[in-house]
Structure formats: C-alpha cells, structure tokens
Image (cartoon, rainbow, N blue to C red; front, top):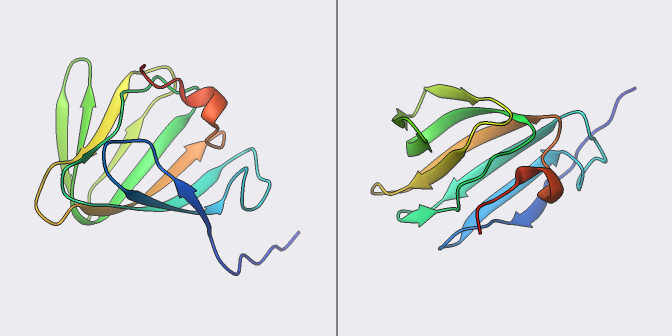
Length: 120
C-alpha cells in the first residue's frame, strides 16, 4: 500500500501556551493506529501537564531546546539529540528556553487522547 500525505492535520495541543502539532501519520490524518508521526513547534515558555501514556514516544529535536522531565530526572535536549520515553512512564515536556523548540514525535502505538493519561 502506498499513501501520499499532501498536508498534515493541525491539532490543538495541551499546555499553558500555543503549540503547533502537525500530524502527518496518526489517528486523525491518516487513520493509522499503529504509529503517529508529528512535527511539533512550541514557543518559549510552553509546558504541558505531565502524562503517563500507553505508548512509546520517540522524540527528535530539530531546533532549539526541549526539556523532558520524568519523576526521577530532567533532560535538556538540543537540536540533533533524541530521547525515547517508554509506555507507562510519567513524563512531561516543556520548552522554557529562548526560541522554543521544533521537534518530531513518533508514538507507537499512535497517540490518542484516550491513551495519553494527562495529569489533572
């Protein structure tokens, strides 16, 4: 099967500030439940609630800096670096640094609001 994606679906992100999610593959744009692939663009000062998702998330930072917090550690990722967060692990993403960040997120299985389990 070959499927061309002519444009991403734009999804509203959770968090205290605007963040652009451009989903290329996933439940919304391609009807794919096995994997979601999205480009994220978040501004300086953006942070989202913590979450304990049912999916693995592979994140590759393209520009800026991304802060990834777990219950035990904090990681500051710069352009060219990547991180894998495992299903069932509490994690929180933020971009507190000047210029925000641009990154690619790949979730397996695909991201779903029902399986992300965000903090209240």
